[in-house]
Amino acid sequence: MSHHPSAHIRRLRPRLPTSKSIVAAGSAPRAGRDPIDNELTALSLFGTAMSSPMRAETIVVPLDQRSIGQAIVYVDGTVEDEAIVRVIEMVALAQGLHDHHRLIAATVRPGRGLEVGDDQRWMEASWAAERYGCQLIEWFVIGNGVWLPREVLGECQRWPA
Image (cartoon, rainbow, N blue to C red; front, side):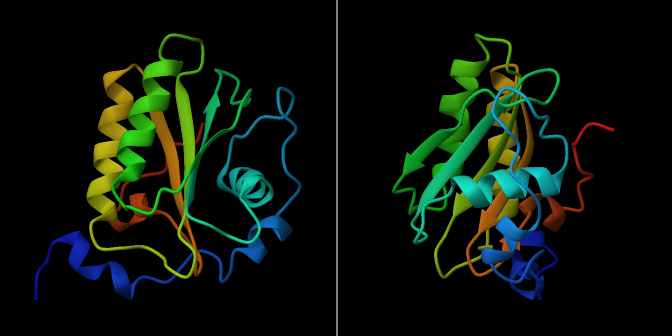
């Protein structure tokens, strides 16, 4: 048996049982007004922002220094698991030119969940953001539950204290 983190992904349990639990988690923050400074607030936003019925998409929210989101970036049709890295790179490139240096993201995978290699994709997406002066705070995988690839690596959360 391999000791590489990717080999153990399927044994993890999702953070929440279904995507419907996301919306019930709390009220979504208001754009330009409410800080998105924790996992629950971010999940509320993504639960409200994602398409219904669920479809393959990636949603990224750039945050300013006060953790307030000014925009939501949707990329439809992100069926390939590797799409998260390209999407983060694209958004980080654009945001690195502005005053939004932190990003939160969610990939929606209808009927699926965390996949082998998502731990590596988390690292690659984080590095892509850093190349353009941004920090990827969190990446949620939403499908047959809610998953945090960062946790597969045992990496500490990056939310502001």
